[in-house]
Length: 176
Ligand SMILES: [Cu+2]
Image (tube, rainbow, N blue to C red):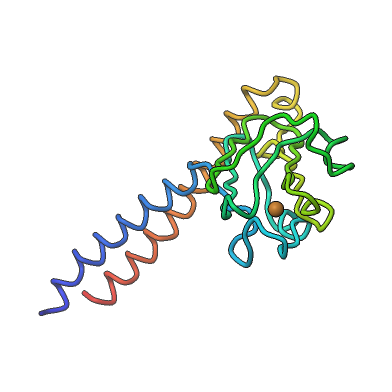
């Protein structure tokens, strides 16, 4: 195979990479709670886990666990602080529970089995607006802030795409 035949292949690979980057920039994220080092269990340090992640409206969290061993209860701050699921907001026990983080705010979850929350099986999720809004965007309200978030995400995608295209051009020149 001559080097010339490699050029269209390199261009095609660059195009595939570009569309993958564009999709990743626009998509919301689903976080498996505790992963990759843990899951929804008695060992994972959830305060540590949330520290390295940022949750935005539109993201989802997934609790993965054995339903014989645990469950998931969404509670108020009072319930979270007291490890009480008495006045719960909602309860899940499928072992594969996906919770949508629709709005900016704080959500509290714990395991309702006796003693598990007290042993640390509780998690607090802060859902924050995505892009750092300028003064105008901040005044305009939530719908425009999600629009500016989408714009920021797509411009990040385009910047990454341009970088990939530049690399493809360099590779194509070398091969030619
Ligand atoms: Cu549990």
